Image 1: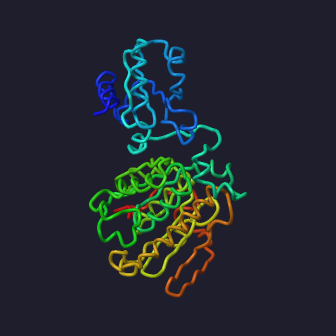
Image 2: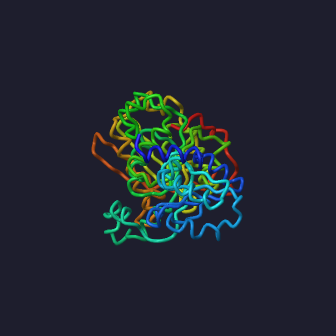
Image 3: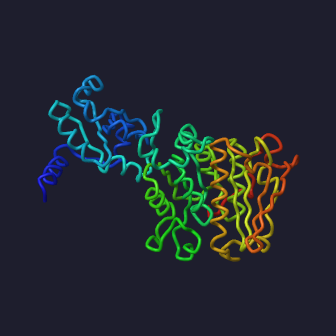
Length: 383
């Protein structure tokens, strides 16, 4: 063991470490969390509620920030080393209740805890990562900042959700929410490209979060390992700017649709069946909703699931990428979104067709005051 390892082990005993989850709990009880990273490190986000005070100014400014040395103080850095060293210095100054957040902001993200992005420009790493966006006049730095500040919820981390989430992560959509109660099965791997053979049996939400953070560690990934139901839909949907429907059953699709109508959120819909796919944006503020297209679910024998009917593995990839494209257009305010239109894909014929979708004046959900969730919006699963 090196001298540094010996010192860090001693500091962990003397200063003490807490997990990110425990740090958040202590914040709620009145502890002050200081993010001591340098200014260029916090462009991608501060832990919510944290005060930014760079390590080089900590001892000089801590008394002005925390005049009472009995106040509980938490310190967080990128990986948990600088915060331990800083904790020892604060104890030497007389601060009695100090702890370091183990694993730093990296562990904070993995724990799914929220980040707040301060206003300002892009740092060098962000400029390198999003260089091709910055070169597009219609996107540029202002557009990239919009993406970094955006929040998107994907219902399902399966065949459609996988490519949609991967491309939104690569594009720099700052907060991605994922709700799915399923686990990775080997039969998923033919099309669900977020997952890997080594993660068979693990929750899809955790598998997805690991894959997305490996692609873009600056993301904030919020996961909900549960079914989308009436009990949680009204809490989740309003927290996001755009909802991606990656479900494979009508009950979930109706529930997503109805909640989006109620809360005024665009619903980027996608579905697949063997060699055919559909993509549309349902936004009742500007056009029809999903129930205008499908007022009632068809008989089960006419709408088998992928597990029953099968699907060509690449087809969900095409549909998911199109959903990601529509989502980026909505977030950036670019182009002509698929509001009031249905894009139909037939991969065997290599044919794409677009059909107009009028609003149904007799729609039971979007034609007047929201009537409440119907009995058919009882989602048994979320992909």
